[in-house]
Length: 463
View 1 (cartoon, rainbow, N blue to C red):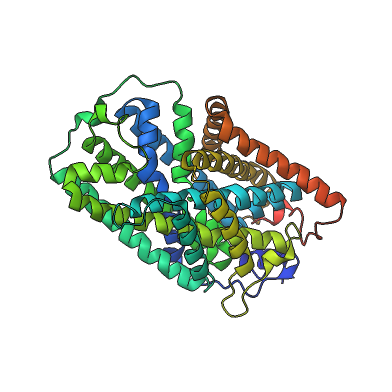
View 2: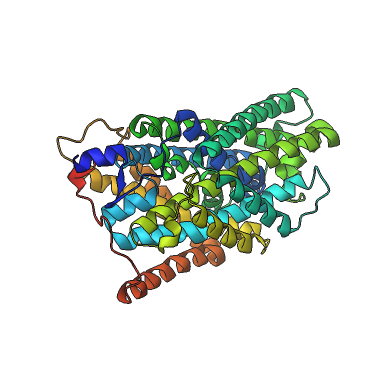
C-alpha cells in the first residue's frame, strides 16, 4: 500500500497503526458537530457586547455578517486541507505535516489550554447562567464544573453515541431558533427602529470582530474528527461548508430579532450576558422567556458537548506523534474513546470555569484560536505550490488565492487591534503561545519529546 493510499484510508497516522479510531460519522453527524460547536454561548451572550462596542444595530449586523464571511472562508480552506489530509487532529495535523513539529506542538498546546479548555469553561458558565433562569440552581461556577464532568463521562462511550447526541441537539436547536425568530417577530411587540438607531459606530469594532470570531469558532469542528468520518473526501467538505452556512444564516436572524426586541436606548442599561432571555421577556413575557432560556441552555450545552468530544482528538494525535505524553493517546479498549485525554481536558476546563471570568475567557480563547486557524489557512498556499499532477479527487477551495487571503488579512488585523484595545486577555493569549515555544525547546533538549512518526510530509504527497 502506498503512502498516498494510507493517507486516504486513514490506516495510519505517522508510522503507527490507528486501528481503534473507527470511521462511524456520516455527513449529518459531522455537520452536527460543526453546528453544535458553533451555536453555543457566543450567539446568546455576545450580541450585547458587540452592540455596545459598535454603537448601533447596523454596524453590529455588519460585524456579524463579516464574521460569517470570515468563518466561511476558513471553512472552504479547511475543507481542502481536510480532504488532502483526512486525519484526526485538525490544524494540529496540518501544521505538523506542513510547517514542522514546533508549530504542531504550539497548536496542540493552545488547543489544550485555550482553544478547547477555556472555550469549554466560558460556554459552561453561559449555560449555567441561562439554566438558572429556568430552574433555581443559582449561578455558581461549581455548576459549570459539574456540567463539564457529566458531558465528559458521556463522551467516553465513543464517537457513535457522541454523533447521535450532537445530531439530536443540532436539529432541535436549529428548529427551535427558527420558531423563536418567526414567533418573536409575529408578536409585534418589538420595534424595527432598534435595528437602525444608536450612536455613531466606534473605532474599536475590530474588538467586536474578535468576540464574533469566538461566536463563530467551531466551523472547523469536523476536521478534528476527520479520522472517524466515513468517506472523508466527500463528507468533510459537506459538513464544514454546510454547517457553517447554516449557522451564519441563523446568527444573522437572531441578531435581527434581538435588535428588534430591545430598544436602542436599553442596551447599555441591561445585564449583558443573557441577551437571549431579555429579548424573550420583551417578546413573550416571563413564561415564554423561561421556555426560550431552556432552549438556549440546551444549545449551549450542545456546544460544550461538541468541544469536549473534539479536543481530545488533537491530544491523541499529538501523543501518537511523540509531541505529548503517551497517556493522551490511550484509547478505551471497548469504545475507542481517548478517555485519559478527555479526563485531563475536563480538569483544566473546570479550573478555568471556577474563575467565573466569562468576558476575559472569551477574548483570551478567541484571540489564540484565530491565530492558529490563520496559520492552517496559510498552509494552503504551501500545499498548492508544491502539488503534483496526481493531486486530484480532492475538494478545491473556490476563489483561491483570494479566499484564504481574506481570512488571513481580517484575522491578523483583528488580532493586532484587539491587542491594542484589550491588552490583558489578548496579551495573555500571546504569552501562552510564547510559553509554548519555551516549553517545546526545553522538552526537546531534555529528550522529553518522543520520536515523530512523520515530521514533514512531502507536499507532493498531499493529494
